[in-house]
Image (tube, rainbow, N blue to C red; front, side, top):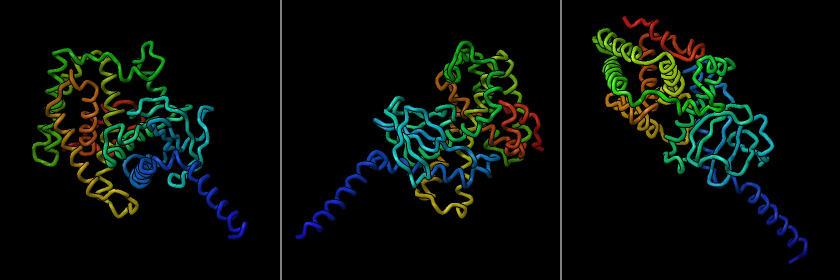
Length: 334
């Protein structure tokens, strides 16, 4: 065997080893990166049909794994992030840092001033691949909400108190335990449940009036500040939950638009049906003191579907204020 042959073989082996070393961190999480690409593809394909320019968000994403955090689609990462190659799947530079966040996180907040979807792996968030992808669609919708006017409007809500972070959104002292508030919220949710399941029936006018009556009674039990928090949560988290369902609906009713799905459409259909059943059951059996702000996700989900029926142009107005109340009042449900 010639020395030249040995040198050539050695060189090839060395190149392979170097390639494996450089790709090792992302290669381990290939399935997760494929799932991120699936979520991005879905929004690019269907997002603009649902919300104006939803398909034009940054898609900045932080994937939190067991030991490393991967940052994708971020224009200017801070110094704590180190370059880690290029992802052909996502068409972006990849940056990493040692883990700093909870492994089960599902959130969206600023990374170096860029709204970023921040997600633990499907395993660490206890989600199937399809459910994780649609959860990421939810977090990307929070990027869509973060318009140039969003932060000014949030300040004008006057809900932060002394909080210097966004944690007030989770920890606001809403009267979840108040017996009157809790009972009336249940009546409001039940009336909304009856209405949502009857939108195509001849009873929609009567059921709409019953729903509005219970909704107004709930409003009267709250202080102005508490009601601003409620309507903001419905606007922000409720419409993100509504978006999960509507994106699935578009995907399944216009499958010819998307030929790149890595999961079968039946998997998406099964999850869409499960999501609808879960949210409508929560409406029927709401428990404000136990579920707390998660109840507001469900209200937003249902009121989004209601608005599709009574005010079809409502999504064009959505980002102009942090409440859907005026959109509901502009009803045309005859």
